[in-house]
Image (cartoon, rainbow over all chains, first blue to last red; front, top):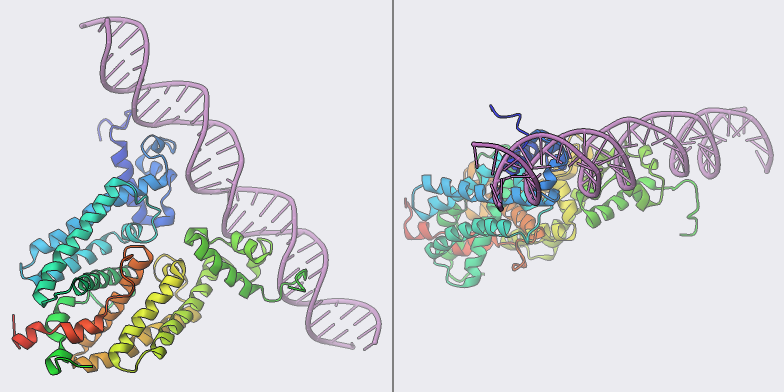
Length: 204
Length: 204
DNA sequence: TGTACATCAGTGAACGCGCGTTCACTGATGTAC
DNA sequence: TGTACATCAGTGAACGCGCGTTCACTGATGTAC
């Protein structure tokens, strides 16, 4: 903090992104404006223009960082879990939820409401990496379940993603107050399901 | 259209809600303002104040109507489907998705981003009715799967809801372009799952 | 059926606010020589 | 090491815009008698 009075900030771009993240979680998406971000970063409201031509550019850069952290949150949860596939699926779901709970407004910005530039290379790559992690979890689980067709394997992927995503959304919107973790898809598929098949191999 | 020049509108409240819905889907949540709603309904911008004290009140009334239509969309899809429980679960999921696809901005208003008054009686009741329909589908499916404990039954409920909700969100955000329907939870649980149990009744 | 009057639902002008954007400027930094 | 100068990153005033809100008003409707 010693050299604070410097005319040149030094690393304003990073400071603006940091301020944007704080502001976003404090006031929600409608509260994210260039003027407020500048004020929070301690510079005049015209300063951000040198780093981001408009709010969309700032949001896009923020979302790219967010996807990186999101991917890291899932990876971290997986690293702590046992290597068995069911445990890995569960851990990824918990990581997904943990990120959303820690950064609800950011999570919404990334997925739903944000006015983002999806042509941006950094954002595209960061989002693709997150999606690839999902695939990396789903594929061995599909093997484990004995899914052969590409359609079934893709549908399992969608089921895992959708349930994690839906639970995270409902949780941050306060609709899942009584549940502390996402539904355990792996357990349902491994231990509870299969009724029809085990009772009646080619049922209605 | 004949008596259009009347000074008194006659049914401005309903017209404002109709205009709000159109505007919401046309411009998204940030585009929903009292002034634009008034303009679209063909009245001066001060007129809505006689019917809605502020934008939140209008959004809340809109969301209450939306939850009614949402419940109806699921009921309609169920009515068209076979009475078997798996078909009913599938149909509800399709109804959920159909509503979200037909009214993406409204769907987001209802669940995520809308500044709604959740103390409002109409909204509470409409949302509760939607949730009850979900429970009405989940309960017989839990019976069918032989789930005994309350925890398992609640978790199945969350799994069904989360996967439908998550898929709907991802679909309206353009992340599921290659899939035309939600993942079929019922099929996975009935036909694909149960590996561990059928192979090894008390597995790890 | 006619009149007086209260009430209701709209108008339109005015206000202050925060926003993004522009622009001339100024101070700090880095480089050429 | 010293000086001139280009470039870069910030300032602060100004702009026009759309927003919610207020307020005196006005026209239509409904009711009492």
